[in-house]
Image 1 (spheres, rainbow, N blue to C red):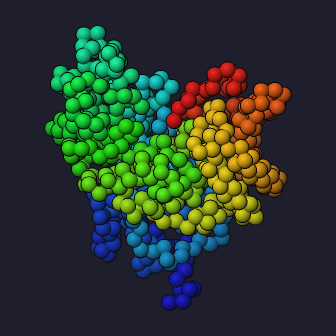
Image 2: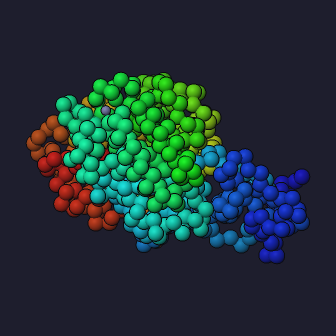
Image 3: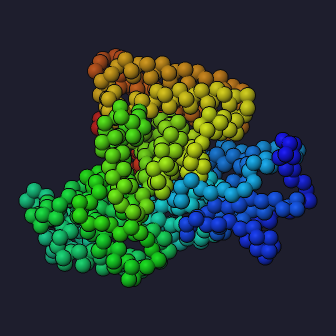
Length: 577
Ligand SMILES: [Zn+2]
């Protein structure tokens, strides 16, 4: 076959048949699912017509969007307010003829069965942004929408707030729904039970503390009974859940009473609770799958109890460093705390594991800490390690800063192995046009090369912008030089642009300016004199436009203008992952 023949021209009269129909059945065109929720698709040409058939309706829908990408469309971001106002959430090329490369015909199977997006703490989400995210998800190949059930912190998002509007939108697209996360306290609340049953709650020191301060006493049979009963009430009131995440409260100790300690590690205690919850769910909510997490002090495989293999586990490498790959021998933190433990889970437990990743971490404070190369390397690694999916936060107000990271997560979640340079060029061309694309790729590579490294305990920047003490000044000064170069390149790019792309680059410049100004403050921190004063002034000046524009999220909580502007004056902003 010649190259010319390989290129198929879709002429005006070519029919595109979508989904399983009588005709596809007759012609034996179908997609063979390899697992129950497999949403791959097949793309075939028969008698000049094009057939696109998914393993399920969601597969067909994702297939249509993948076909559009094959034809040159690039889904850059959800159509959040910010993108809507300034333009540029989608790139649609103008072409005289549409050509589909013949190599695209055949079976398309996702690399990871689960491709979730998590609205996380949701500090900058509104109903409109949730709808934009849901609409975008199948465009980028995602299939699971994740949301906390009921957060204790009023700033955080709660499923009940959105469910009436979101359920039909999720169903329309066939998206799976995963709700819950940190929430033991929702099923055994302090206000309702503490006064009459303090012994149900966690013993810390010599005091029974609240459900928010510690995990309740999981060896108290009465407490367990009430906990499971309330959890089942929640599930019967929420039949829409495909997956229910039952996680302990975020980052608290576990009950230290003699009975609880006698059971063993936190992982073991959690495993026993999960086994109980799963048994209850099998009877009364058999369609909902139970979700668990391996997080903080319970990342180990439990010593005795085998968690039922239909439970979905999120493995959360929360304290990892991003300078090195998760399995890199150079990083004992990554390797010992996370990689080796993950390997033990994968080796000894039969259930599905997805990684709860922090590639778009709240603590990054919308600083352009992007990492397309690391994401591509790690997702390829996870693919070969039999991990089922990678989850990531999806905040509207930090999307602009992490657009390329989001894009890379989506691409690798579908394709598994991606040529990073090619993908970067494709994204950059859609973002700023072909003549500027190379420069934008250079900017991204410079940012990844310097900031990813800097955000590491080794250099004292583990708490970027939260008053971290600079311990390696030389490295930080070198980083600032790299950032100046990126800043210069963005300045060159922006002069040749117009419209939405110009706005996008302008905002990226601002974001880089306050990152640099913040690093400047930290470098001058020991010098309490004029130098620090100047650095602080510069920082506040650089911060101002981002507050006005709404395009930046400073942690998982939206701070008031006064809070932000007083940063460094008094107490640092409340720290949060
Ligand atoms: Zn206890």
